[in-house]
Length: 161
Image 1 (cartoon, rainbow, N blue to C red):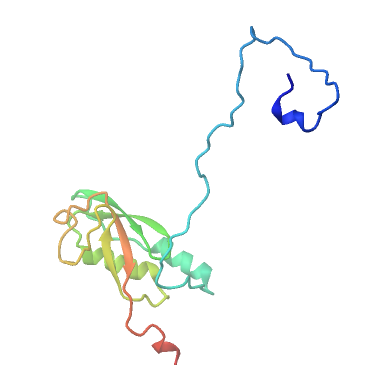
Image 2 (image 1 turned 90 degrees about the vertical axis):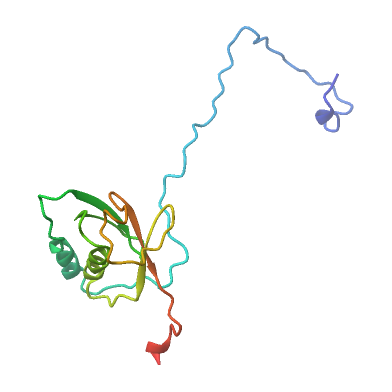
């Protein structure tokens, strides 16, 4: 019998069909290997556009010289900071440093760009770090991820007029 798919094409003609017996062969499927997304993402919902700096080389030099004074007699922890512009920084702090020291470090890191007002929060669970007098140990921020959140201003275009 002629399959239904071919009946319309070969309605009144004779069709030669060659069939090969491949029962004894092992069928190897050539499924493509799953490859998860390996690209790069961009953070959505940033309150400010990316600011392009003209003095890029000077800025890089200043950031390389920027460091936090550490006391080697106290425990040291790494804090990963996610900036609002998408950059990630890993900085060493003593556990006796305060949240205000992290905020000062971010302001110095952003340097010549006049930093808009921002707050700090932890990644997961999302908690705003409102009390800047707490030490990293008291706030349980050893080896933590801290996110810079820009605060929305009431009049965003006031400076332009």
